[in-house]
Image (tube, rainbow, N blue to C red; front, side):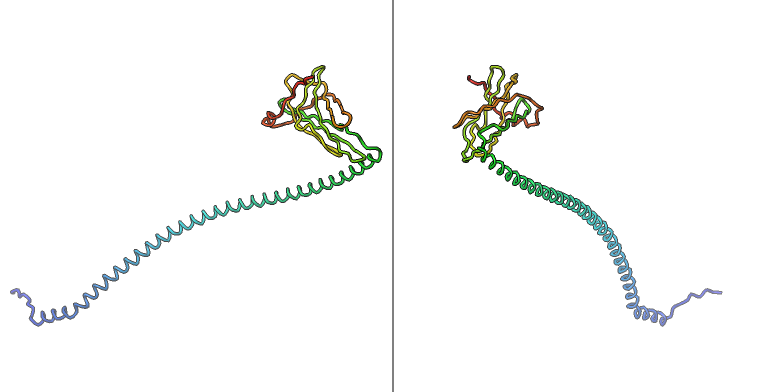
Amino acid sequence: MENVEPTNSPDSSVEKNKFLKTNLPLFIAAAILIGGSLMVGYTVGHRQGLTVVGYDADAEQLVDVVQKQKTALDSVNRSLNAAIQERDMAVSNADELFKAINQANAEKTQFQGMNAIYRDILKQRGGVSLTIQNLAIKSLPENAFEYQIDLVQVSPNKRRASGSVELRLIRNTEILDVPLEDKSFNFEDFERLTGRWTMPKGFTPQYIEVRLTGSGTPVIKRFSWQRGQPVELNSAFVSEIPQAEANAQ
């Protein structure tokens, strides 16, 4: 049997070409549609992926900001609580100080009233001549001392007491004059003189003497020297205290 090769008729080729030409736009449109779908899917997926990554980064940054704000808020709260406590303490101290001042003023008024009564009684009885009511000596560090001299006078005719005061340290025949910050006095009823001096090294007095000179008879009073425990004092002030000098007599 002989092989017979198939042959295409001219009519079938024409039909095939006609079909391709007719459906070519459809094929192209389908290819474009498929390609576009793939591109859209890739783009959307890529953007969604970037959006998720960006959201995570923003969330971490937001958490960090919130944590910093919380830390700052805690610090502000602590400072506020400390300020409130200090304010309450200051108010409490101010109240106590105000009460103490009022109490001191009340006691001062009462004391002044009693003194006025006593002065009137003393005036009716002839008064009290100028006298040294009290002498106090306070021992300080570095061989320094502080004196306090209280002078009193009650005059029926309200005459003022005026004059000068001397303070002397006596040991056997040795006499040292204590330099006074203010030697003069001028008062009606009472005056307190205070000051400090430095004792020469190696000198321990037996007596301390106060002399008052004025228009009337001089007043001289001698006290026995007794040294107690020194009180605390800043050395910067001690260096400024004058030193007692030997009397020229």
